Length: 353
Image (cartoon, rainbow, N blue to C red; front, side, top):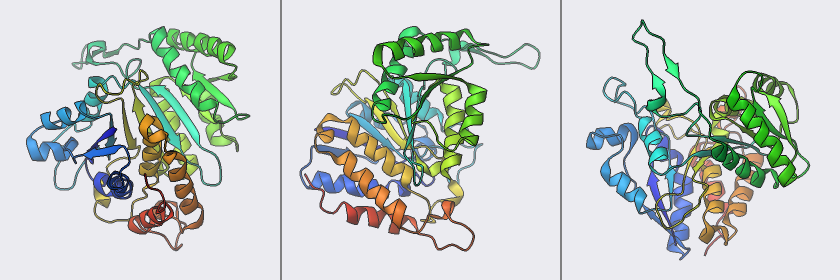
């Protein structure tokens, strides 16, 4: 049995998950080995409800779950940044609490194959406050970037898993080895992993990688890189795809110790878009991508082949339905959130336990 803690979050977070949650609840009702708990508050809405961006009841629910399905966390209508200045800290705290140390982003390019970005999400440039010194306006600010060889190898091991799903496509390892000692470690690990796995990682400096992602027609299947580089490059890939809504995100603990608390958090990669909350116009592709990856991650659900069925339904709708507003040309007819979701749910109507 897979237990999923539902954390809708802020802004469009709840509505963007409507379709995927409806599908998961139908699976649950049909007897599939899945149980949803929540919704549990966190982020700005958690603060409004409890005074904390990560309430204790939400943490306890996550401790009792195998995975988290999250909406967006950030700004929310009616609550100012002065009232709740840093809601994203709740997401960062969850990552550290459950050691979700590797990020895997899936970007769907219409008419093309996915691009997968694999990076460390804790450590490196995303170190904790013990490796930062704030400036008081006189002394220098400092950020220490530290990478452990074991943790770097973990990132490459996950990248190999994804690269093998795309035989014949380019796989790149992005660094700045001419400048950073951490990048020289990264590059040595890329070469050792390529020799051991047979996956041909191509070394690309980060500035060159940014150029190629903008300029080259054919994108790589997998990009493996340090956290900050990957954060920037994944947005470039989303721009090539046409919208940040075409990205699903997973932050995972590669130990995969099911039965001992959360092993991964799945979410769409876009923000909370408070100005669009309630419009029912948002593009739910990233949420469906996140749920597809969740279904592939959890052994009980992976055995039902649900991941491939959800992706097939999503691809069918994206390829045949009118575009969502963020992908439409001027004056082009569009499809709204509810109609988009309904088409996917109709395509999945025969999927039961």
